[in-house]
Length: 222
Image (cartoon, rainbow, N blue to C red; front, side):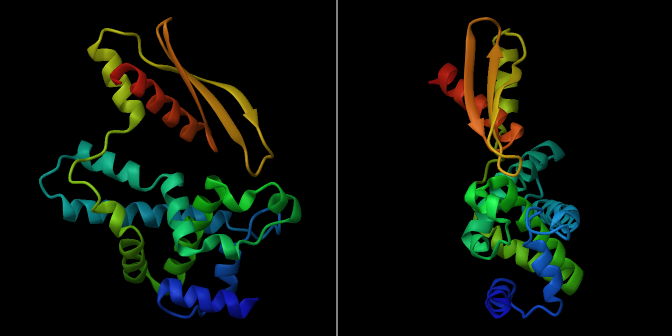
């Protein structure tokens, strides 16, 4: 098994790992062992944010801070990190407890996003910032260059729509939480005044709120 992980890590990061234990820890969920990915995720999240902020600052020299922030926020979400993790084949190497596997945790955006950040943290610790920068720019390249216009977050867009139409600010509420602790599902309802409402489900409260905002925008602009 370790040989398989070593080969995959070498292909993914462009070099064989010197400290296999750190990368194994980055792939380990709390249902499998107490020595899991959480601390490395904390580090990798900061490394990803720094590298992405620096990259956007270089790529879009004419954009103000607000536009750069929109780009950054859209590129470092848990959902995007999970997408990158899937593309790199992270799911095949997750270390999960039996119950977590049975509950479908290997396809959880929350877990895959966290593990992706933990892997970045492990790689940064071993190879340094320049190597981590190269990996992130390669893994996120298509997403960064996908649009010339800074994306508008659906929640911000909905709030702006409400203000422009003299409506009350959107109000979000969790109407249902289901699933196990390691793979939750949230259903969120958003309301604007008394008449407009929409609901959506996501693997985190934030993702569900974003999806609900998208659903309402589709209503009011469709």
